[in-house]
Image (cartoon, rainbow, N blue to C red; front, side, top):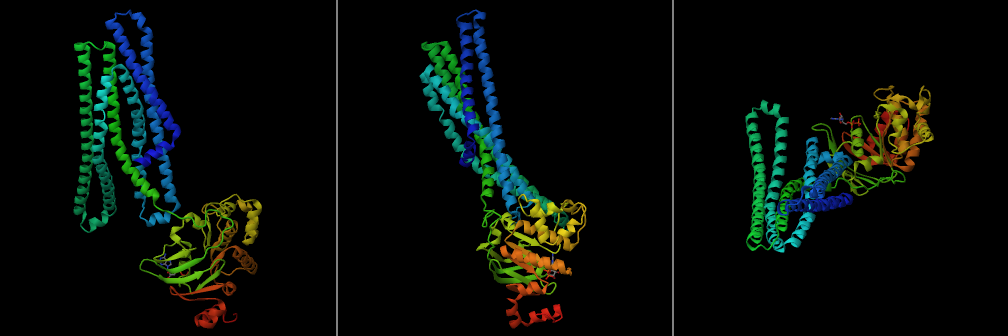
Length: 574
Ligand code: ADP
């Protein structure tokens, strides 16, 4: 509850507004009672002329208006406050899911669960729209009323001082029980919706296996227990309002008795004072009672809020590279038993290897040996079945998706281009405004500039779903141009298998050399040149990392490597 209160008090302007409005409401309440009693006193006891009362009626009217206005303003401020806090909660939740969707998915946050959390945000409403405004009023108005009552007749003040504390004490007692029940209800609700959804989704399967009947019982059971816990909460809420009613009735009764005795029997108090007090006292207790019911609403909100805070506090991400794109050092990568299996099918067996910063790694192996799978695993596009990819000493999953993908370019054989212009497709990775010159330079380095110039609309040509079709190689070079604009520190490149013309091949070679200056480059290599240049070659065979080393090392120690080169090049090149 204190956390929620802090959220409210952080919004200082609204709280100051509430205090001022509550003060005005208190003053108006007293004014209203004063004018009312004064008029009655004049009319009935002093037989005043009706015309002489006009200014008093004016005063009464103003007081009533002011009280209503202040009440309205307090209500509005509460609703505004609630809307403000709720929108912040929603934003935080969305941010926390968006920052790490893969991790959220891994933690079992399916769509339903997310929407359930979003619903909990609404449950927080009561706390801010009802409880906080009531709390401020309860701090201020009863004190004002009590002050006035004391000046009028101090014995009444003393009676109030003795009886009023019973209300908060009693509320605290009942409140404790209610809180537990409200928590229980929340959990029941969650469990109920979970069961219900599970069963609905699996309904056809259940029917096939003749389980529909049993599940019907299951739904019946959980809905009944949800009903019971709701009734429990309501019961204690009703019970507590009944008790509050009793306490305040009793107190008002005692005060009325005291005043009546003094007025009629002892004649030690004026009619004006007696009437004035009798009008103010119920107002005093009404405020406390309203606070009591607001308190119950707040209890429900607190359960929901606890759920939300627990969700928001989950460590979704650790930023390790920071969010600055430029001047990033390539990371040190360690593959610690990294493995992956497609369901019951192909498995990439646990891999162990170190990839220091600025390495050039070539992944080689027969078709179907698992090269693409390994690349996707390294990119974080496939979740490992076992083991870890350790990045600068931190497990890959602990890094937020944003900061990971900000540092990474994955240029597959068939990269995804979205519907838009060529330029937009290039800029996407850069995450910043890029100048025409930069776009042109990137296109040149990627060997795609000539092709783009040949198009009627150049960089503004529409491509992707709605636009012009591009060949696999062209798409790949646009993706390469993206990488030049993005300047990532880790590049995963699936080299084209299809033959390139000599010129494009040269451009590509140069491009890669340039990218290697600022990043680690891991390539699925098909070209002998790339393989020979690599610091580290991973030789994959049927899902196993059979050998790792430089070209020379593998030539000396690992005969399948030589055989592969021979097969690839007809044995002519080494
Ligand atoms: P490479 O890139 O070396 O040719 P891949 O990593 O693409 O090899 O594929 C390795 C094995 O995994 C192949 O036998 C392929 O059939 C299988 N495979 C690839 N993708 C999937 C998938 N989505 N589901 C199941 N099996 C797959």
